Image (cartoon, rainbow, N blue to C red; front, side, top):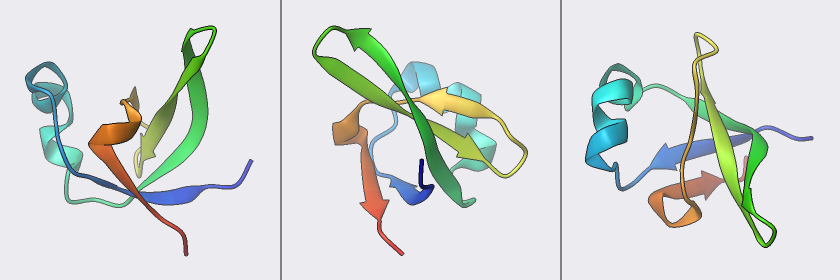
Length: 64
């Protein structure tokens, strides 16, 4: 799987507390989490290998 650079647009309050230090760092999509049979949420990895999953409408992909 290719790694795509990601910008985070909207941060839910629950997740905001966890990733506040990482918002301005580069991050990549490294996989997907299956929420139900029809929806996959991207897993985002930061520089120090911390991972968090977010919904598609909360992030912007940068294809570089």
